[in-house]
Structures are given as structure tokens and as C-alpha cells.
Image (cartoon, helix red, strand yellow):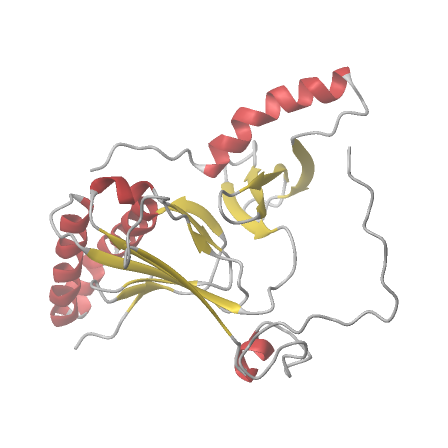
Length: 259
């Protein structure tokens, strides 16, 4: 297994929270790094604490990390939200893993994104937003498949056998015994990402944007599905101003059906 180089988002918020709170108490006009909000625990229905932190993802944009913990029952939950709205276009990002260091690539998966390990033919459907890395995504998929194997062997032994093949292949991937293989993130909202590396060669990392279909716009709850502001080729139309303005002053796991 690759050396762990990624801090879980819940721990990241916990590490920053104490210092941020002390600075805020010392200077009321100093913005807090972490905001704390008392909120309802959906597990025991008592009050717990949600911590919110705005963070910048390299080569991407800002996102909001949310970490919830309930002192009463111990329930905790971590997720992310984009610090903005849906983008004009959807995005598809693909990474070709060729070495153990690639497992540490940071992954932003919004709640509208689908993650797929292509050679494994397994995907994670849209759901809870995550800030993780490639190793974390693949480990979660394999662990989820493995946790239900007992029931599958009793109820669907043939399916369980095929799933076991996927689990074994996934374990080999995690051990670095199945390079190269690919992982992709597809997000109609345009708010997901896999971090590139400046040393990536041709075919290693790829990002492309695409126009959403009418169905994808409707699924996102967008009432205007005409893609106004875009040309037929998908380029953004720059608005024409009737009166020039002066420049501003400088600022101070779903499993695919078995075949």
C-alpha cells in the first residue's frame, strides 16, 4: 500500500479549528479559519457540531469542507460543497496511474459526480461530496464490495464469484501490481477535479469540458436548458458593453452488471 500522504478532511478541520478559535477570541475583527455551527444529529436527534472551512484546491478553485461530530452518540460525517454555483459546462477528468505516487493525487468529487475505475469496470455514482485521493476512492469501493460478500455467497453465489474477481483485481491495483490503469471523474455541474502534476506527460492526465444535455440540466434543477451565452461550438460569448468602464482600482460504489 502506498504511504499515506493525505489527511482526512475531518482531521484537517479539527487540526485548524483550535488555533482559528483562539485567534478569533484575541481579535474579533480577524476572520475565522473555521466556522462552528450547532446542528441536529440525524442519528440520535441531539445537537452536534458542524465545522465549516473554506479551502483552496491547487489548480482548481475554493471548496467548503464540512465536518460534523456528535458528542452524544459519536456519529460523524465529512463532506464537501463547491464554494459557488454550477459551472457553464460539465467536466470530465481522467488520470492514468502508472506509479505508486499517483495514488496520492487529490480528488474533489462533488455530489453530482460519477467516479469510475475503467479497467475495473466499477463506478461510484453521484452522492455525498468528497475530498479524498485516488487511494481513498479505490479502497472505499473494494471495502464496500467485500463487506457484502457473505450475503452474496448465500443468495447469489455466481454473482459473488464475479465480485470476488473484481475485489482481487482491486487489491492488486492498490498493491501496485496492476499498472497502468485509469480513473475518471465526470461531473455535469463542473465542480469536480483530479489534481494534475506539472511533470505529467501526454496521455497521463486529461481534462475536457462539455455542454450539458437538456436532461442533465433538468437533473441539476436548472430551469434554463438552452445554454444561453454559448456558441454552437460551446464557446462562451463575451458580452458587449455599450459604454467602456474604467478598470478597478488595485486591491490592497455502483457495481457494473456482470458480463
